[in-house]
Length: 473
Image (tube, rainbow, N blue to C red; front, side, top):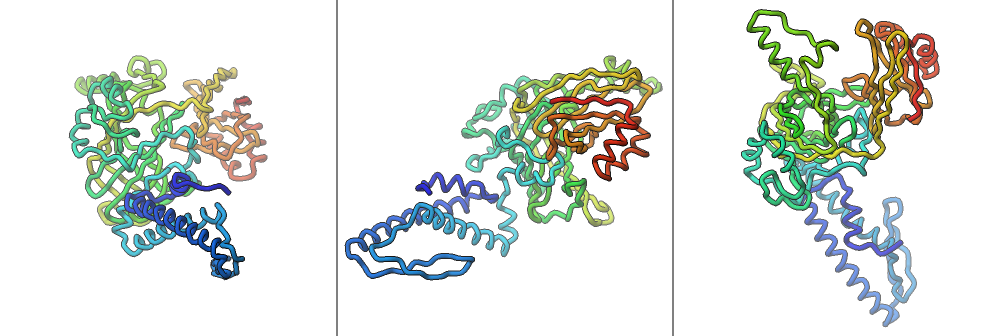
């Protein structure tokens, strides 16, 4: 019940899911009309007070219908709450009309990007659940535009000097010193009728989460739903250059989310540090040498790991530049005879260097170092507000499978293709119980009990597990 300024109204309306220059202009015009209406109302009321006019009528909205009631004379004034309701109602009408126009004109709707908080938009279906808003870095500013020659410039960055990338990743200017506004780059590129935008990121002690918006001039097919949360999936074939390593990381990245409308897919791309901290260049060289000599390819084991592999330390601050070469998705129905049920599109989407800084809020690594007489145990666990990762120990001749239960005995579900990267959403992980079982026995017998009640599953684990430990986090 306070007087709301224009900035207050902007902050409230800024949470709307549609962000567009046209709508923003309409909101500014509406705010101006509100100011004028308030001034005219105040003038009329002041005049009414002087003239002690006859009773006037005021309309109220009750349950969606208009009813009338008399006000007493002497010009009854609106409260701050009534003024706010009137202002919001007027601006809401502008937005509703805009949405109505978009429904009637799909091409216009496709041109309005959904570039707000993608983390919030897809948290209901994202396997890891909610990303902490307070630790999220926004990458999109609708008031800044990427220079037309950004693509030509970014070609120089892929495979370039990683130190140059790191120096160029400061906020406020691009890699070549051009001013880009207070909020830095727009990480956006368009090719082959597809526009891809990186909208925000969150970096924990285990992974980077990017918000990604993919907009298509042609309507997307109906993608299949997956997992317990019924998320939809688009995979991006990427080339990624990190400032802390010499070679490029390539492969497919999952973008998990959902279609916001026929032309817009919103999702989250998770980059696990384990996928970017290994350098296998020595192994690749050894394989090429073996092929030239007609010999068998070398095997990577625990004993030969150091011989063929290097592991980079992912620093607290680093830079990444991403290039996307193609997209693919799995559809509910067959698209055509050539592609089957796969959606495929090729292109060349390149993005400027982006500076990443790990969040230290509510993250920890707990060293356990417990091993039983069979050589089975738990080395450590990593925890963030999003996930919990298990690092187990097993002998070379034994295959095991680990399960974690929260304080209430609820099983932590995997959030990725790695069964030990567990989603913590909806779980009380103040205490975590870790069971390690024989792999075959778990898959053939124990796993089925996880589909029943938690108590029965926990009892079976107590009976069958080869290793158990309780961790107070």
